[in-house]
Image (tube, rainbow, N blue to C red; front, side, top):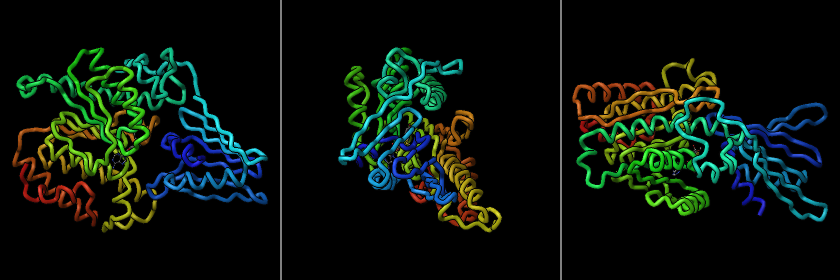
Length: 380
Ligand SMILES: C[S@@+](CC[C@H](N)C(=O)[O-])C[C@H]1O[C@@H](n2cnc3c(N)ncnc32)[C@H](O)[C@@H]1O
């Protein structure tokens, strides 16, 4: 029972964990070799002891700690969760939103706070005020939305769209999570700009997807749906715009692969947790690998640089930009790729760059492995 409740918590938005009662420990989110973890500190005999627990094992770990200590509080950006074991060994649990009535704090929003699903997603209060702990998430969704809307409007202007039979532009949100971004964008495009839009959100988490389909039904969003599926297996046929905000590690590679395979017109991907290359790279530059933190950060940068170069080799015009400031999130890099007519010159140049990068890194990232044959054939 307690495990279910703990596993339902969004640890991606974790601020702090406090374990107390029979002694105490405090946990804060950290990244260890690129893996999201919680670092717990406990003081014994005036000495501090630290333990890093990977997020993937956090449920089991906290389950044991509740039994040992009696009280557990988990504070995330949006919510606080409290667990207590009574003397009669009964588990008490409650949770509440960290509400604060303020506006977004920044002007020129694309999205407005009265977009109804933002309330269902726990971003705003019922009367359309931003919940303070959700400010960063809202700003991320809002800034990302700006790119999606611009791409949408540009696509509408293209001849291919004008010839399109149903004139619907299909957006897929790969690794949608709670879909703050895509549901808000969908609502904005469909009801504010009155556009012909279809939305498909994909995520592995069944409970989250069921909840999202409930929201879709509640608001009568007849051209939106959420699918519980693995990006490794999903078919992205007929997609016009692929968006992906913080799809973890290689999930971003599978999203990009699906987009390339299906000739998706626009790709907007802000990757995160790029762990794969860090574990595998072996460069001739020893200084790069001497310090764990430097290796981790360079591996993340090389991963995204190589992803963009691969897209360029396969007929996408690519650029990389920051969609929000680093003070909002360090995971603020956005790969923007737009499908272009095939250019032998650009493609050959990028293929060469990809090969050199892979040789230098001594490792291939998943996107390269998946598209290797296509890249080496130097064709579209
Ligand atoms: C960090 S969350 C981001 C969620 C959301 N895009 C946002 O920005 O709030 C990453 C999401 O990717 C999903 N995910 C990871 N690997 C996946 C895969 N192979 N297939 C589908 N979803 C995946 C996770 O379940 C999780 O909800």
